Length: 110
Image (cartoon, rainbow, N blue to C red; front, side, top):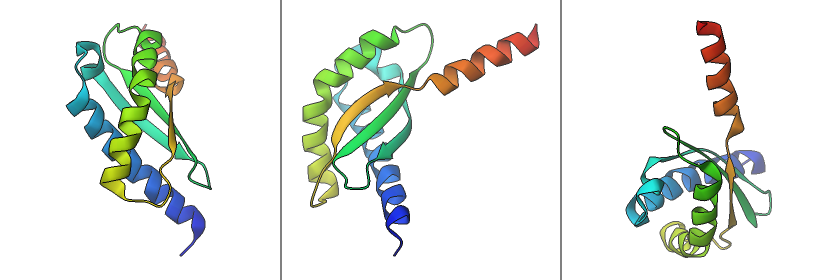
């Protein structure tokens, strides 16, 4: 099996699991509006960049701080669900591509 295919498959699984965990574990109502748009896993599985977007006018910076605080717990639960030899550290980022696309769409409508 190709290593790149394995990494992509693991990234897709991590994306699905993290999205599910965020929805289940969210005690803060602002987190309920988070969508995990992409996950990039390092080749050695030590890090996972998780890109998110939010619905509405939610403050993304504030949500990223909340998710950073939840990262350790989410990683622990991810390790239990996936049972990989190595569970990546979770790093959350704003998916600016989605926001830029929405801005371009609004400009084109005008």
